[in-house]
Length: 103
Image (cartoon, rainbow, N blue to C red):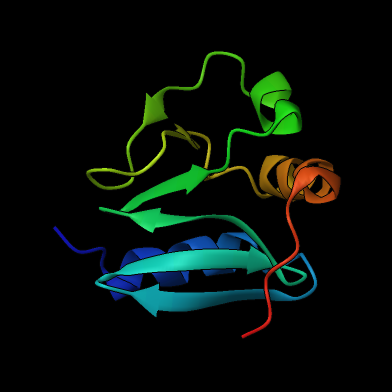
């Protein structure tokens, strides 16, 4: 099942307090970037983030879910209504994220 553009726009609006949020559409889903680094994505209308230590520490009870078959598990962000939490989550995760490779 592909993610809806409406859900993507909702998440982008929730993240609008952060500088340099972008996304890339990929096979009906959306990869989310923060300051040029992949933080996670929108998969089947779920906001999933990479399970870096900072994210696990902030969401110790979060469900680990597969974004798609064959992928590594990611953390489900359940509290997408809380803009302050989302901003803190991405800011805290940022130092642990890998830099995007140039093509």
